[in-house]
Image 1: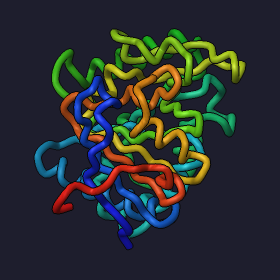
Image 2: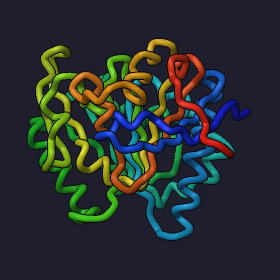
Image 3: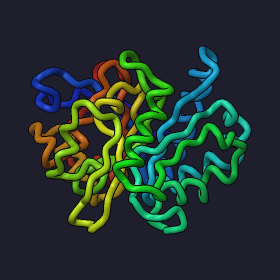
Image 4: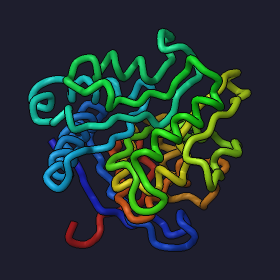
Amino acid sequence: MLYVTCTCNLYPETLNHKLLKSMLHIQKDPSAVTAALAEWITQTIETVLQKQNRFTWVLTGGNSPKALYGLLAASPYKERIAWDKLHIFWGDERAVPFSDDRNNAKMTYTHLLNKVPVIPEQVHVMRTDIQPEQSAVEYEKVLQGYFGAEGNSFDLVLSGMGDDGHTLSLFPGTAVIHEKAAWVKAFYLAAQQMYRITLTAPVVNRASSVVFLTFGANKAKALYEVLEGRPDTDVYPSQIIQPASGELHWFVDEAAAALLNAKPLAGQ
């Protein structure tokens, strides 16, 4: 059951002193968030496919989307979604083998893609069997085969946010946050002692829709800072995700939203 869905005026400081309008969907708990997001994603796919014959979707890794993927892989969503028209991408990847449990693609296959009739040739993993820099170059070439230099990129980017405010592999204090040209970058993350491969803000911010899945009290401080705090993308990299002409949605639970001051607009 929907608890609160509101179009919220988020403080203008979050985007160069301009008013940022985001859709903030607040649900009672993680289970309700997941259910609401599964329905929203399915409706978005259905709507877009009424106007075009493919849907490009960036998936996310980690633990948060596992329950969501489980719902989408089961009835009624498994039957409602035209899986053969989906073209699948990832937002980021750890440079570890596909067999490693830390691999985002492996998690997504386990909880979703192995259970639905996607077309293998339309699923584009970030390769980890080659050097990370080469993988990034190859992935960018794949994206360039789909998207031009102008206009929208992905139909939907699904992402999460860490309790440190990172999204994708845009971690606090990393240079990749400020990448302006490349769509995909690889870099060594010393704090984790591993290479990461990630989409960058330039291509993500051209998406038609970006949706964040965020829940838990441990995310409350970061969520407040990202949505209502002073602009500081080096400290809270999720602030850098601001679709130029697309929609930005946040699906969160009460615990994650506990510190927010954002209120529904009149009439919402």
